[in-house]
Structure formats: C-alpha cells, structure tokens
Image (cartoon, rainbow, N blue to C red; front, side):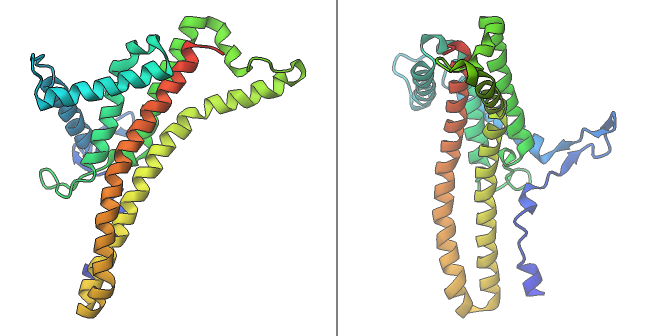
Length: 261
C-alpha cells in the first residue's frame, strides 16, 4: 500500500480537467471552463495588474514602475535592433506576448495552488502554444501582404538566386516559411513539458525512497531532492528564456514582412 501511495504519474499534471460546465456542448464540442482556462485568466489578470500598476507616471518612479519600464524598454530595444524604427508599433503586441508567456511559465512552477488546484502550465500544451504561434504568424502575413501585395512572394526567392534554381529554392523557402509557426509552438511546448516531467520523475524518487526506509532515503531521496532544487532553478531560467525566444523569433518574422530582401 505504501508503494501504491508513493506512485507519481508525471503526465497527470498536464491533464485538462473541467471545473464548470462539464456537460456544456456547442456543435458537439465541449466548452467547459477548465483548469487551463482558469490559469489563463489568472495570468491575464496578473499581467493587467502588473502593467496598470506601473503606469503611475511618477516623477521619481517606484520599483513597480521601473520594472514595467524596464521590460517595455527591453522589448523596444529588441524590436528596434531586429526590425528598425518601424518595429516600435509592434511593442504593445510583443510586450504582451512576452509577458503573457513569462507569467504563464512562472505560475506553472509555483509550489502551491489556487482554490485547491495545483498550478497548471498551459504553455506545456501544444494547442495553446500553437494558437500563440498562429496569431503571430497571421500578423506577419497581414503586414507582408498589406505593405507589399503580391510582391511579398519574392520572400521565397532570395536575391541573387540563379534562374534555373528559382523553382527549387522557392519551394524550399516556402516550406521553410510555412513551418515557422509549427517550430515556434513546438519549441515552447517541448521545453516546458520536458522540465515538468523531469521534476515529477524526481519527486517519485524522493517519495519512493522515503517509503522504502531511512537507508534508501539517504541514497535516493536526498540526492533526488537536491537535484530537484537545481532543476527548479534551471526551470525558472528556462521560463524566461523561452518567453524571450518566442518574442525574438516573432520579431524576426515581422522583420521579414516589413523588409523584403
């Protein structure tokens, strides 16, 4: 019985569970309010609080205002470096995207839950990261065709390509371009999911080692627990890096739409 109690399912943390309206269906699709939706709302609410709390415009800015201005300046500098002066109009979107992913990743690492529910990292679901990637990709397409019209297709033919190579190069560039949202979503999804699975596996080592007795606990549980602390710190770093990479690649894709080479 002790062994059964010590079992940890590393995939259970990714299970989407309905909280309200489990029997709600529209067009055959279940539209229940889930734990994933709840944590999205929590993330959105915290993002709004963070932004509006830092918009006091004090002559001597406080720490909160300085934090918001620092993140805004960071995104502004990134866009100016990758897109140029035209990138300033994308600051609100890229800032919101970066902060939303960052908050979501960090909230999923909390050791305590909200209203009795364990933290849920919705960025570990490909459906969520896929929607974010498609949204960013849609902006790229809209900007590209709005500014350049059909000339936007010249993106698939790099300058200086020999004429006989144009069909093959254009096809390769087209598939490379179309796979961008998939790779963008997959990178974030895999990074967040892998780290959480590893933490759960180590947690099972800790629990099973303790259940097995003091000797096994010293050999297995203690090293596993110390490793969990290190990986948790690494996960915090990864949470920020993945938010940055998602925002950075989005800005690079926008640059392709703004400036055809």
